[in-house]
Image (cartoon, helix red, strand yellow):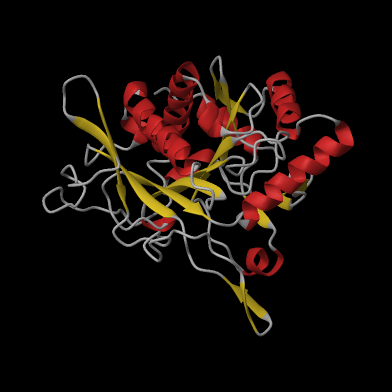
Amino acid sequence: MDAFSELRRDIVSGEWVVVATGRAKRPDDFAKAKKQILKQPAEGCPFEILQPEPLVVYSKNSEGWWVQVVNNKYPAFSQSHSAKHACPKITKNGPYEWMEGVGYHEVVVSRDHERNIAKMSDEEVELIIRSFQDRFLAIKKDSCAQYVSVFQNHGLGAGASIAHPHLQIVAVPVIPPDVGQSLEGSKNYFHQNKECVHCVVIKYELHDKSRIVYENEHFLVVTPFASKSAFEIRIFPKKHSPHFEGISIEERFALANSLRTGLAKLHKGLKNPDYNFFLHTSPVNNDSENSHYHWHIEIIPKTAVWAGFEIGTGIEISTIAPEIAAEFLRKIKI
């Protein structure tokens, strides 16, 4: 008899997730889910024009600017606290600890008010990825920066407040806990097995094939074995590399193709779902200690809401097996 549900353990974090096969939904059910659409007119949108002091600007052919990177008008982290730009230190306050929120908070804006990455060309997406790489290389010169986070919030359900497509780059003076857990899991696996855990996963997924959504010469797009949510996607470089910012030009175009394809299949298959995607990479200014790590991108569609069990236990429930999700996405023509 088939199991009513499965508990699957993430090979890196050690966390358990539930694949609730007993109450599984069909792939089409996720496309029918009702959601609020974030719609704002182009007129009056702050991202419609080239900003006065962009950090970097990229153009495609002779069509004017396509991508600009600017400082966030309302940053969560800023350098403005100190003219000397001293690195923050931990301060004790009774049993508590705190430090100043020193860092960077930048916004990556693409020009088209309507077209997100799912509807762009590979060449257009490559310019966005180039902006990530260039800003990484610039920020890592700052010895106070410990980690650089790149992410996108798409849709109201994912935390977006502006409809115009944009992404964010945030650099912080600490290692974030989710990243730290990923680094620790990777390190432990390497010490025990003398292999990169993500390289092992990639090799197995290429052999098994049931969770592959797409691949090209340099990248693999899969639904993870222990998916945290329905239709979660991860994008791995096939070649081991701890640092995203070290990608070559050829790899940058291949990543653009992989990211666009993964998001386009989600967009078409699930009728433009809200999602978050983020980059997991090694901390900056620390080349040798995390050589075991394998950078990657995670895409988390907002296909469910955490309820009491998830909040109370930290165990997430997915109502579709990743193998079925991958099969559904593979068949979508874009």
